[in-house]
Length: 338
Image 1: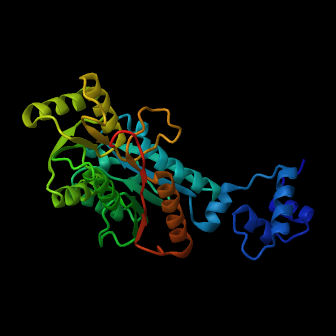
Image 2: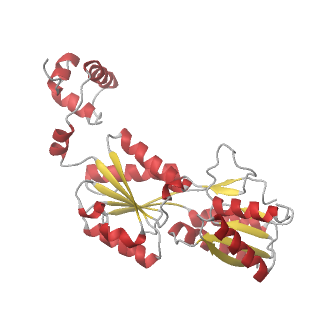
Image 3: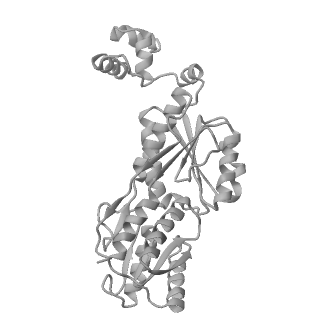
């Protein structure tokens, strides 16, 4: 039996080989929808499988995008923000016939990442943790590899030049949330943050502080290991012993807020009557967790899609259309604040 080739598909669909090649590679510009459908149906009928090696050689691409996540937790993929972000990126790339190569890296091993040493990827996406200076160093390392970069949830900067910074408006979202909080007229607040530093968390704290200080609300910023329930509880207990019971507890993500809710209600405090509690991210779209937190919804899935679109535009045209992409966050009404 003769192998099924582009020529075979073209002859059966009664189109040119070039047209079949364009449809196979997802380039439908200038081709009528009817022709695209006919070619796709012929490909399915003949069970044609494109020669990926030949495609790579022609385009000088591997059709693989790398995604490096710098996080010291071995369970980083259980973080719902990371899960949604990666899903959005991977699913979009899949529609364009690209694969995603995911690599979780601890902060001490960034320089040893195979993504920086091998030429298996066409570009690299990043989600970085750690102090700002260290994150800048990571960006410089990736820039030295020569790959185009999409940096998610990272403060835009001039270097690297061949990069796009894709963020959500964490500071603006935190300000919106804080304006809701101050309607409660709190005198004293706890802001719960993870020990591991992320640009998004710093932006949220900046927005919270701006509004709380404007309304003369005292606050303490409390750090803990967000992956360890006991660490969060102990940090909360220490803060209560040192500063008294707060009027409101503000989690910079929903996990911190939920642990605080359980711990405080187990101790007999009523929420929201005695203590108001808020979160940030709102990924529990099915309402499986109770109570429903007063929170802000993060567009992590859409952020992944936006990063994928920006990156493929760069690979197709040789430049990023824009240096920055910013998506809004939206309020979520809950039962834990008022």
